[in-house]
Image 1 (cartoon, rainbow, N blue to C red):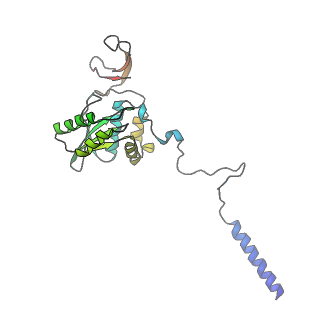
Image 2: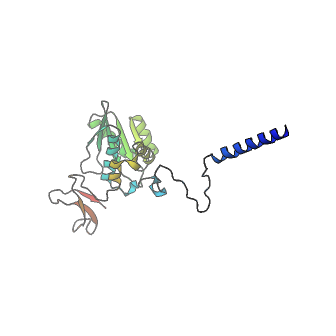
Image 3: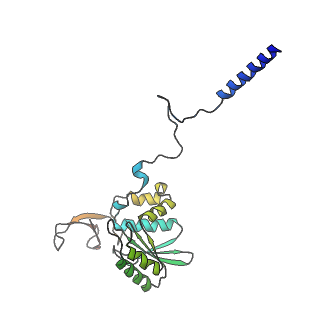
Length: 223
């Protein structure tokens, strides 16, 4: 009986060692010289976690906003012309609802109630009852109170970043084309712009972006 017990214990021990050898190896901590396993998800550096929206000019920002709405399945019509402070820059249509959108590419100043009143006037003038104001900055408390009374949606940098995440901006070729385009395109005719220096007038000596088709197109973007 003793030998039977010893043989049974040995069989169990061998089976346990064999099962342990079949367990998958863990990579909680790599040993020196041991390769660290990689994930199938691409690694994105810390600096690439957010797009550099401040590097865009006002026209690029407007195009980016329109692209995001388009990626959401909306129809987008550009209305701003060559004016960085137009009352309504885009009319976004979805499910029979028309939305007036203004894009304010401000980098330091908060949007105030004055801009809200001007935007409301532009909405009324075009017969629109829905409006959205988008900026890279935030809004004063007076602007927020005015907007809430007049059915105007306010979108700041944080909310716009969530919109970009919603269209997967890191892997979205249409969005990336705008973010990585170092050219300046004319907001009036879409021709490439060139850097020039004012030769006369009150801005003499100052740099500006002028349309390459000048004098046929006289649109400019301030540096």
